[in-house]
Image 1 (tube, rainbow, N blue to C red):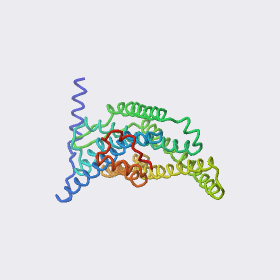
Image 2: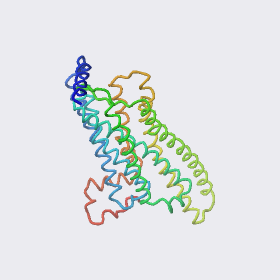
Image 3: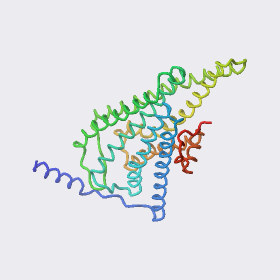
Image 4: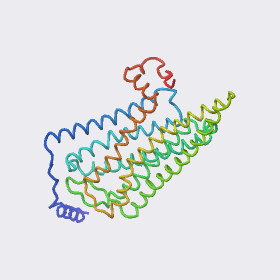
Length: 333
């Protein structure tokens, strides 16, 4: 053991002898501006997703199966804003990893857990919208809030077990990291498995089910027009209202999924071509930042398209949620 430690120290000193962090090439004013912008992005991500969490958790009307997915996605986005974005933005601004190697390893493990969670949340949202649109009445009777909570909990557990199993096995075989560097490399087999399970499979689920969602939504739009052209019995009016409600939810969540795919695309390309094309560290960081910005954009999408979210923000900011029976306030009208 002693010999291995000495060999490791020799290798590290030998490899790191010519390594140095690149000097900052920006003026002090730009340097300060970068930190101000970084702080603003982190604050917007954390506060925006915290508002979503409080809204869905507090108001009883929002305790629906779909909103359980929205709540869980907001939790993962909140954790990305709180735990992952600050070190990445500091790393980008400083052009060097200023923390120690142990924190680097923790950062990568947390990063991949939360990224995997976000991807599979989006996949679950696509499946959820398909089930709700294909048969709204069956969906209402079979998919309860408790059922969706179990699905969400299982998703968290699966991502935790998978990520820790794959990446902790690689920690002890990763290349030597010099002070100022932060890298964690997977072997070829693990890279392919991770690419298939984390990205290709989940992206296939998202694309397939949202294609089905748009086909069903188009059929519903045609059915609604036909119902509106005739005198509607009460049961047909209920069906028409249900169809409109589900189509609106599918439209909003479709925008959410589309934005996510756009943000994920650079990282997906990087995963495929990273071994073929030698990419610089700053390119690697920019790719990561684009993925993380999705966590900032999601609450903005809710605010733009969900009236209940705007109303709940008003109630939260004015502290009306601390009043008795505030959880029973009608925020969907």
